[in-house]
Image (tube, rainbow, N blue to C red):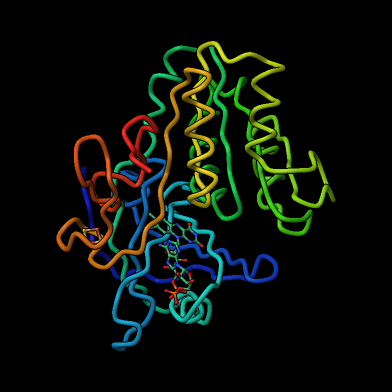
Length: 265
Ligand SMILES: Cc1cc2nc3c(=O)[nH]c(=O)nc-3n(C[C@H](O)[C@H](O)[C@H](O)COP(=O)(O)OP(=O)(O)OC[C@H]3O[C@@H](n4cnc5c(N)ncnc54)[C@H](O)[C@@H]3O)c2cc1C
Ligand code: FES
């Protein structure tokens, strides 16, 4: 896997809604090599503050262009949102191990069940993009998106445009299923069955844990994309380890995607 450190011009950096932003840059190497679930590590500023890079998932790839989707949550993402088109951004990527979706493409049967909580949609759009390539297994790809309210449901139109079946769950019932996306997942599995299904998921830790449990009960494989605080982002500092059946593993290098049965919660 080719990893590049590049300084590239920002093509666009626009507010999508509220605290959510889209940033686009050009990099032939990252666009060509990135797999869904992988991320880039960004030096958001030219100065020393903030010192550490910030990890953001690859959201979409089109030709040589790479698109990110991020939420402003603190100092680093705030600085990133102030960066202007034409300015240079220092980026390392693509990093980590992404989703393994080759089996789904080959099988041409079974269902791909994508489960997203909040910003967890970010890497799953890229996954849907790959699953839905002509002749892919995309016809049977469903995305369950969970959010607190209708306003916080992200990327539903994007998934629809890619050809996914979209189902929504909101805590307050303002749109879709009233309740947690994991309850919607249980309902979905009871209606459609789950033979040959694979779950791909990204979102808050509690949601991932619940998805793991549902996958175990239903004997389905689930691939989970974890988010941990990171320092180096390249496997050197052990700052992002999680406990697995094979001992501690680094989210940045061995993940961020892990099989649910590997993790110890
Ligand atoms: C592999 C990976 C992929 C990611 N992809 C995306 C993405 O596509 N879009 C996106 O918006 N965000 C993504 N994130 C999260 C993003 O990296 C953090 O939100 C960002 O680094 C926060 O930086 P900050 O300086 O703005 O906030 P900080 O000031 O560092 O933190 C603000 C708040 O966010 C929490 N936080 C910060 N980093 C993380 C983290 N890694 N995991 C959980 N909580 C965190 C802090 O505890 C704090 O409450 C990803 C993280 C990882 C590890
Ligand atoms: S962030 Fe340094 S090992 Fe993962």
